[in-house]
Amino acid sequence: MEEPKKDVIRETDAQSIQLAKTLLRTARYGALAVIDPASGAPLASRVGVATDLDGTPLILISMLAPHTGALLADSRCSLLVGEPGKGDALAHPRMTLVCRAIRLERGMAEQVRAERRYLNRNPKAKLYVGLGDFSFFRLEIERASLNGGFGKAYLLDHSDLIVNGVINDALAESEQSALDHMNSEHLEAIAVYAHHYAKAGNDGWTLTGFDADGMDLVNGDRAERVFFPKRLETQQDLRKTLVEMAKAGRAAAEHETFRT
Image (cartoon, rainbow, N blue to C red; front, side):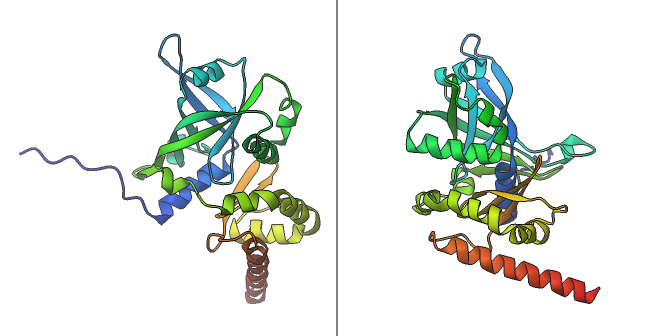
């Protein structure tokens, strides 16, 4: 008797969703796959990546690039994110997002926000962001395939990765001023977030983004994701949460110092 095939897809749980969101929020580049309108064949290219407040990937691409024309002809695409790391590249987590690309018209509110968040994450893009042939695209996620390493495969949908709600618009209004304030006045607290919550070494961390789920930090080419203890419900929850996390992180560090 033929044995039934083993289902290699694991049940999606909170841990796999957090890993998927971490891969997405920490991505600074990815492999974009589109459909070549001339041949119908797949066409892949590397692109810079950031995320909007709700978690939607943002890319900035030139109208002169073949993949841009392909997206305008057929919005279907996929984006592969995940750093290979040391050793066997296939042992490291990665995720493929199935998306539809939407071009953001220059000057519209979504485009202005996308540019701000993209440049926070990829500041070197300031060299060409203003050129007329470059455009921002939102890659609206339909579903995703997460490979957390050998034997750790998951299927996720839009709701697993995207945070909807009025909280996004509220945070968008104050996000940049909050980032500027933290990065200029509270570097010690940012170090606490990086060291205690992200388990990241070294100094020099800065914040690049806030959203309802957490915060994004960078140090040179390295990016880290720190999740809030619970999702923000209002704009006012951000400051309270940051203060409480800094206090808890300092207390934990002092306790560890006392023990040693």
